[in-house]
Length: 392
Image 1: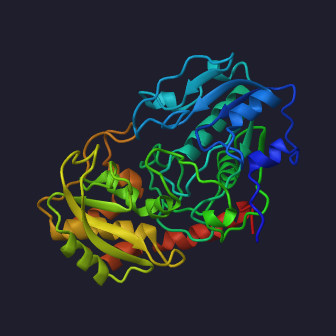
Image 2 (image 1 turned 120 degrees about the horizontal axis):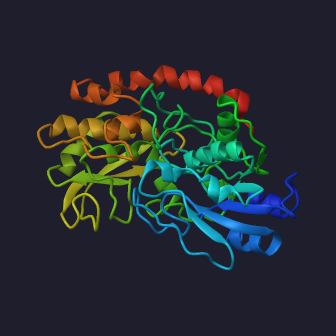
């Protein structure tokens, strides 16, 4: 049997890294996924072993109980440890303040990412790196697996003017990188004058699924209950930029989708005709307990992954938006309210990285033509990322 992957946290605590935290004032960016292999929270281990003086919580909070885009207030001090929120009521709240860093020698980042550019934790990391560079505070990233693998890349560039908290720098929607690889890339691209240390994993290889790692799955956010959720997310998060329910308020968020006006059989039939690899579509009805269409029956589909190695989550998500728009154009809508602190750009465009995909769907382009809009960017990124990959 293959050995369990050792995370950066495990290697740090076992003294297998060059990082020295003894005698230093330590801050930790964490959430419920910040655990050892035996599911003990890193904050507990740090409090025992080091001088832990501050905790920082990203979107969803240090306890991971806040829903998406909900402001999280800082907690009161606990046992002398200050707790700061990095997801408040405005864009400025996303970055550690100089005051929150003034008593630190080193800030550690250890959160399970899910391998999708819109998932905000790696951007919390990048913003914290920028702040630490200015404050002369060392920064340590404890690496964890990309749960949907490190080989396949999907999606296009972020065009100029479409950067946001769901993409501060241009990465494909599914990037195939780990947090340490993103930190290395961001520091290099931004020429950050920062004392950056990445504690890599031991035993992780790029083709691994999360199950292959034998690590415990801890929900990194309230609507990320399973590893399967992470796999569909690169495409299904696009639905946040539409009036279609992405399944929030259901036990299988992002795997199910629909709206009251949708006919599930018709939608499943059209999607099946597209011959998308590695997935089957089952018509269904669900009633969200919150968010879009709360308490209202929605008709739609559930994705069933038949071959995770062939499955293309981004193209599949685009196909669902395209199909609902094509079948029910008068009922379909794009989200128009502010999204991740941006109110002058459609949410869908921020998620897609430009207006190109939305405009193509509105213009009636077929799925093949839509897919061509990101094909060249994928090829280019696969070549570009070679210089900062840390794992075989």
